Length: 321
Image (cartoon, rainbow, N blue to C red; front, side):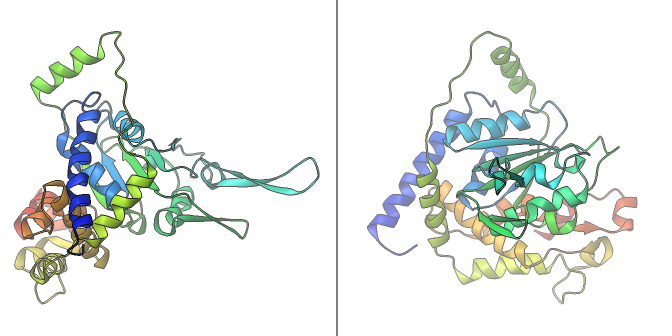
């Protein structure tokens, strides 16, 4: 961010709009404040999110609510074992004049809900790779650009693994955040039951449109970062790699594979957004720590010893921090 009045004013407006978004979403989604923060942060960082939680935690409803509050086009893809790449990307057909015509698939939208993404084979999972990284798709040798902003918000059930296909590391690495959803608190669940067992329907107002989202995405990129914050973020990622000179003993004992350079980039861009959300104009080390777990959770692979001793990824990240 340059030291101009316009950027400072835009940063203040972003802080206000972020709070307005959260307030609007809270009409439907009760509790789960940290999850909502991370989802919105990933959107303003031009990132994708993977939501991991048991059924019934309103993962799908949350994504639909965010799409409504942002006034963006929304498509839902239910991933099943028989889903084909053409069901996502689209396919060529022959029209009445016997000319080839491309029919766009559901990936051509601003927000894509990839529901239960691990229930489809790797071939179909890979259909999203180009879209997530390049914001484009290639079908029958033809290149098509996707409208921006573009986000893939995927859900995954962690307990029912029969008939699923684990996401490959290459695809997992393309998700900015791995967001773990937990059960609501006792009071939050009481509020959920009260609000969802009546005939009243909550109307979600549009807070931001595509133009404002793109403007804020560019603002996040312009936020300045001190060298010591970048060094901390890169150092944290290096501490996850057992072959690194900076690796502590816990990494050598329990980590099979560490995070790659994309993790360092993600830590900084998410820390920038986290700073703006909290009314700051530049991130500090605390902002890096605030986003570290959802960024590193899916980029670190435990070894057999860690699994045998019951040491979780979150525990390892906590000790590395």
